[in-house]
Amino acid sequence: LLTARAAYEEVAHNGGRHAGEIAQKTYRGAQFGSRGNSGVILSQLLRGYASALKDKAEFQGRDLAEALRQAADFAYQGVTKPVEGTILTVAREAGEAALLTDEDADPRTVMEVALDAASQAVEKTPTLLKVLRDAGVVDAGGKGYYFFLEGMARYLRGETAYTVPGVTVDETAAAPAFTMDFSEGEDALGDYGYCTEFIVEGALNFDQFRADILRLGDSAVVVGDDELIKVHIHTPDPGAALTYATQHGSLVKVKIENMDLQNREFRARGATAGASAPAAGLEKTHPPHAPKVETLHHFAVVAVAPGEGFQHIFESMGASRIIAGGQTMNPSVQELLTAIDSVGAQDVVVLPNNKNVILTAQQVPELTTKNVHVIASRTIPQGISAMLAIRHDVDLAANSASMTEAISAVQTVELARAVRSVRIDDLDVKEGQILGILNDEVTAAGGDEVTVAMEVFGQLGIEDYEVLSVYYGSDVSLDQARQFAESVGAELKTAYDLPVAIFLPEEERGRTALPFGTLRVELHSGGQPHYFYIMSVE
Image (cartoon, rainbow, N blue to C red; front, side):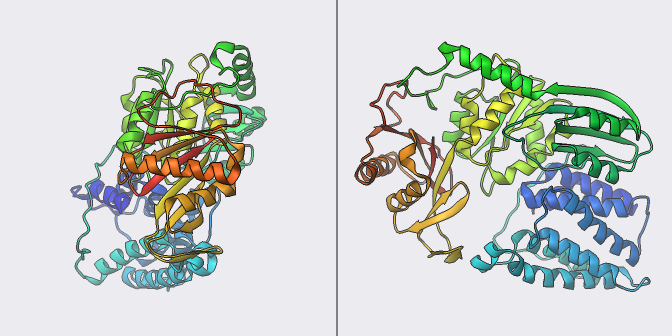
């Protein structure tokens, strides 16, 4: 909804009458205002409309059918691993149905056919995705696109708009125009290869060029058009990418960095820097008592975080900008871009800290002249772990590698209340129960927080870990959080004969030596909504 609102704001007071120009401005508004995975995909759908209607002052039914088809094509291209049973399926089947209409069908007829196909596709989504079938729901993104098409159909019928009682939407600011494409991907955690960047210009076939480049490596971003293309890719053979590019055009601004060498140098310095490594038997310092860093010197960190507690933690650890957001509060591309452009450093790391913000963040590097690295942190604990991995004596590429590695070592446990009864895989959840969520997957449900937490801890093998950080939410008092931590500690001692040391917020969390095998439980105020507790297990 917010992405659609951003698209609307870009053209609401435009006054133009050229269909192609209006379509392009609509896409550009959505591009900067997109939020969350479905919002990003919606922006790519609008890019397809703009592509099909380019240079058309007005359009007929056949043009609209082609626009619906191209919208789906661009949406599929926008993600590395398309999943059927989502908004992608709904867009594709709507576009395919539209193209089957008569050549001389008017726009209203084409839209009615597309809308009917979209409705059927939405109802079919549970048959394509088990998680939807188990939950007894249709895909939310697909349903959202249906409403989008329904709005178009209502306009063509001459019907007035309608509103939903009790629902309000904040205005989303419009932004300068920019055209791009993207490819979602994550850095591999082993052989880093070469970070290769270049611009190629000439008479190009963008779609073919992009498809061929994507086969040469990962973490690829290929943007541009048939005249100018910018490439960023991690590849074991940068020569292959450059050779391919020179066969199709002229190279501009080539940049290659050996990430394997940087990583080895980083590890070597880390191994010899005895003063920077914790002594045997001593615990690493955890937030919020990590020393406050006013600047990260050669690069800055922009982090997304829900709740004042988490925002304070990231600030105390040296993040230059904190964007309020997270689950159900996805920041827009424009908000991320504004934060990045506001910091003084040329090199910037972005920590999305939510799986539904990653795709949005991955659009930003090509919208700014700054060198931006997005660390694919899916949870707040992963983001905190990434901050702890920062070293100020190495460059951005080496830090990005170590931060990416750090997030893979964190287990995230979350407790929230179920708002409806549902079946998830083999787990029956009743409305009002406490949900136990392990690394974004619901794996337990029960009547109270302690019981559910213990079940999840058993699933991950908590006896093999050293530190349990408990962040309590906005609806939990300090006394309630203390009681929860003490009850969990008692249960862990009984169940696993595991020595537990609990540290409350007002107590020192420095490098206090503990007996070998002791689980250190630390209590922090996260201030997050929705979740009673977010826990980091390391």
